Image 1 (cartoon, rainbow, N blue to C red):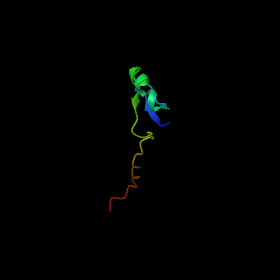
Image 2 (image 1 turned 90 degrees about the vertical axis):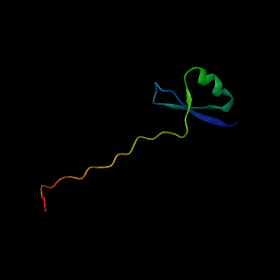
Image 3 (image 1 turned 120 degrees about the horizontal axis):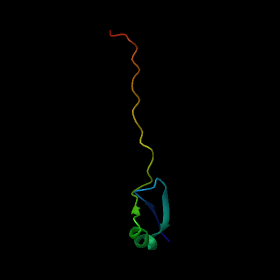
Image 4 (image 1 turned 90 degrees about the horizontal axis):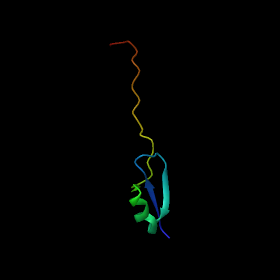
Length: 53
């Protein structure tokens, strides 16, 4: 049986449910997640050295 990853807008946790249960969870506000979400990676800022060469 195929399982689907779902997320709720008010929660950070994602859950996996059987595909047949998706309508039940959608009625409760859950949404199908495209892919597991990972924390956003941000670019590191360069440290200023004080040299304005």
